Length: 88
Image 1: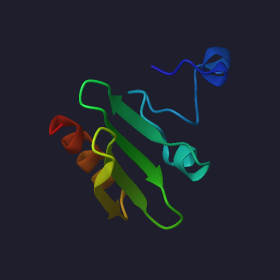
Image 2 (image 1 turned 90 degrees about the horizontal axis):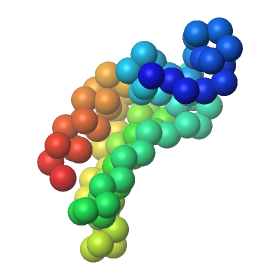
Image 3 (image 1 turned 90 degrees about the vertical axis):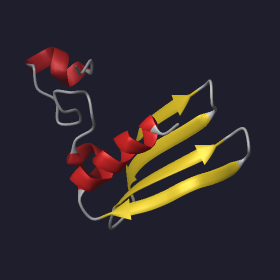
């Protein structure tokens, strides 16, 4: 559920979907979805990169990038993002 001021004012939000994920508009504005797992120190990020959606995963403990995948469709990027979180 979105907790931003716009949603509180009129029950709608152009930045968040009903499930709390970011909308295409939010990505176009530069917003990013980021999940950090403190136990494993792995960060996974989903963002718009000028012509495609990108999913990047870092291992902060080892100091290296685990993956960087790009997608033309947000649906595919979200699927990969969720699957990559399961594998941590």
